[in-house]
Length: 259
Image (cartoon, rainbow, N blue to C red; front, top):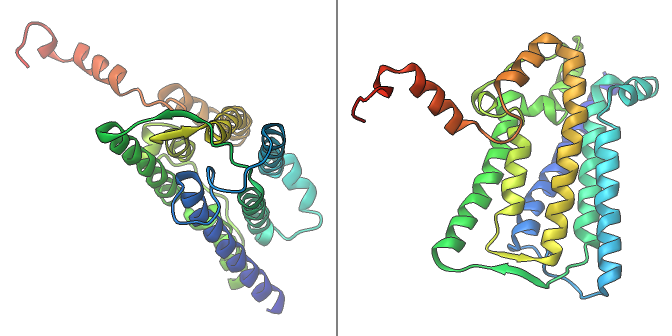
């Protein structure tokens, strides 16, 4: 019972650290409220700023990708109980993010600057991206994704069951709405600086590469079910217009009918 309680408390602490890192990320990327953000901080030399920032993002990318792979999960299952593996992954990712926020070197050189309606539209898309990212975690299983479900199941002394393949809500439109949300939040800004652009380009490249590995793992886990899902649903960019044209071709209205 003591071990199960310790695992549960560990999961709650890990989730609390994630919550802090996520909330700080909102201010960091958008330059809101927080004392040190993507464009606010002590000035440094350009070469140093680029090197440090790339190293920080590489550290996050390596940890985030390597620990997510099935081979690594099998390896550390020898040392770490299954119930706290996801919490450990979440905790380390969150701590590295906080390190990135702390040590980030701003590069304030302007790339673009908008105002008026264009600026407000970009701000709206920015917050829509964060909303999509957060909501998409709840569309599958938020508490499983961040390790709480596993800890609660272990605390009750029952077996941790696997997750079934589901495609709720946004997952019927794109296969990775979480990553789509991040991309919208990173790119949509009325004032893009060189530092923000470096952050966005590096994270976009990482997301595109990491998704290839994730898709491979999902095919290995769900087989033909996931391959059929890949054929029907795009990865990141919704096929809204293509679907509309397909529906139109099937509709009698397509032939000379008023719209």
